[in-house]
Length: 150
Image (cartoon, rainbow, N blue to C red):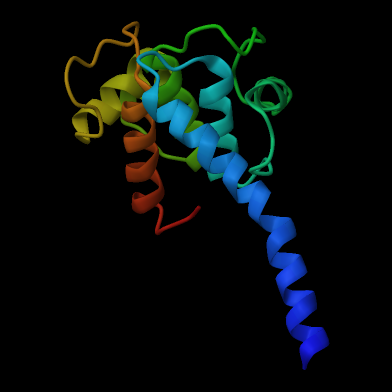
C-alpha cells in the first residue's frame, strides 16, 4: 500500500508543474489589454483539444496556421482583432451562422453572428482590439453552448 501511495504522490508531483504552466499562461492572457495571435491560438486550440495545455503561444500559432482553418500565417506577437477571433472561435467549435455568414464566411459576419447571440459586449466592430478577459469570456460561452466541451 505504501508503494502505491508513493507512486501516486510522484505522479501527482510530476503533473503539477504542467497545470501550473497553463494556469500562469491563462493568468497572463486574462491580464492582457490586447490579445495577440499566439495567445488566441493557444486558447482556441487547447479548448478544442487540438493542442496540449503545456504548449506555448508560439507553438499554438504555428499549429493554428497549419490546422487547415482559414487563417493567414503571422507572428505570435501580432495583435488579434475581435473579428478574427470571432471567426476562429466559430471554426474551432463548429458554430453555424446566419445566411450572410454562410454566403460570406469571415471575420465581419462572424462578429455580427456572435454579437446577435450576445456573446460580445460593447462595440461589435470586427477590427477593434480584443482583451484577454473578453476572449476567455467568449470562449467560455462557446464551450458552454457546445455542452461543456473542453
